Length: 333
Ligand SMILES: [Zn+2]
Image (cartoon, rainbow, N blue to C red):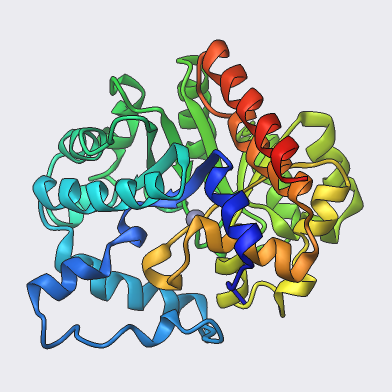
């Protein structure tokens, strides 16, 4: 499925791309586990097989946590992992990255959140624009986490906040206030919705949290009025097609709603979500769209352009990349 012709490979290599939906803990490089315990981790993980499907979200989450906690134990280890992840993205001609770290790790492994932020930031290679987000769960506003979450707005260098998955829990009132304060301070705000939850969850985060960046959001296609809302409010969906396939959010790549969302004019980007869990790369995501959903080179370039449209970049830099994308299309069409 992730195979690509020589021509498509050459095109994708030249195309400047973004990665705007990436959990740093879910991107743990497998080679680091192998380095830690060569015997235990000598096999390629079974869940990387292209036909592997996670039976449930809980199973996916459990498998990821079981591995991630073995590595993410210190700021130094965050740095080492992030460095490999970002270099791998740079090799695929990704120029702009948004990644989130899980704020719950502060409680879990007892390290300061700002140290995690700094470790990830300092791992950015030259030529990559990196923005780091703090992600939290819908039920994260506990007595321990409350002061940390309240203070996020004051963290210099933190690009924004993200509401992470697990949509079965209700959206709690505290999140409205936190999202508002961060927006007023000029931070970007995102929310995961419309993955395991329906279109009404997408509407909810747009209306209550006022986000214009929805992570996944693919189930918006189930409600025409939500599609119209996405257009009216200029919402971008940071879609992860291979993640959706392996988590059985969609029955097959051919039936993935990104084709419908894209054709409707909704601003969609594509990203890998948790490459440790799915064994995917950004280039694989583009290849899946080309192979299974008949995206033309011009359409793939449009997807890449969408990522730079919403990127926190200065105008001149953005225009320079748009020009470069135009040149790539002209050369390959
Ligand atoms: Zn995600």
